[in-house]
Image (cartoon, rainbow, N blue to C red; front, side):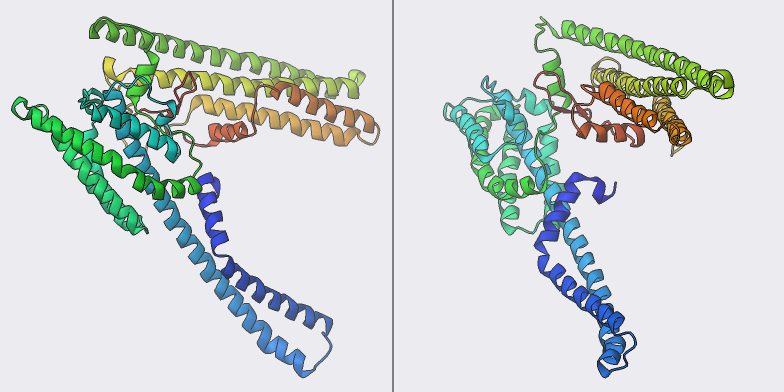
Length: 470
């Protein structure tokens, strides 16, 4: 993906473009000199004065050379600064996500019934302070968390990754010395906290370990606001922060939170039943997809044959009949395209449920592709059908343009009525189906982009974004 296709990159580059305003001012001044020189030479084209010779032989070539050189250098500097800014913001965002995930883990392990919903996303510094105060209340009460969620989310591995990989990444992509300082302080507390959690499993060391856990957790919470005050505004300016991704365990807890199971076996059976239902519904959606495709193919073919018959039969060749058939074909093709989008949406919905539910039942079978060659060509059959329906729309539009050009001299009013009806039909079919302009970009992604299943957007209840990979 190029930078102009990514809203985040565009925002970073626009910020850097504004910050380097003095460079663009120099370019504009030199450009004015070049344009003025050219205009002067055009006005006095026949004159052979010393000024003309000076402008044509010295000023214009020199200013052009300087302009090309400065623009090249300034654009290169703008591009380098933008790429550096992108890396910096992405690293800071990942740090916020990771430290927030650890914070959420302790809220759940403490069984906090008042855990705020926005804690599961990006939030302002006041909400961070409130969240920390809640945990500090538990610490003052000397309550020890259960560490179930801590182990379930593999926080220990996350701390190791932070201490090894992210320390190096931060040192290479961070321009703020204070960020490096606070990051190292926080990581020191996290490493000691993780060691205490591991010692908590050893009965002879449990008492001292619990004491160390409360101390290091309190130190971790006290250090976070210092880092967030620096990092969060930078990330917020560089990216549109709305929701943070969650792990698969959050999906499962929300999917089955209204079900009370007496033991693990009963809960596993419920997950298995949900997986079977997802498989059945997915297969049902695929069958419906192709039935709808055959249905619309039949309609479009019939209308196309009728339109051809009208054009070739002189006795019934009237503009009104042609226009009606043309509009009818346009209606069917647009309805077919929208129906394909809806069918593919629901098919992928149930496929994603399968990907999220299958791990504990029969492993990662569905979302694992096995082939004997490295670069597998995997055209999507349903996406090809979607593109074909789009081409059918374009074909009817082309036929309509051809008909309009042929009858415009004799029936100009009929052509305008045909165009108005086509716009009205399109408006009626799309009204309520495409609710926001941003959804048109999703259609573009559906048609031409290879989707990544690293993240799933879930809109049911309070679930926002869920990561498939554990």
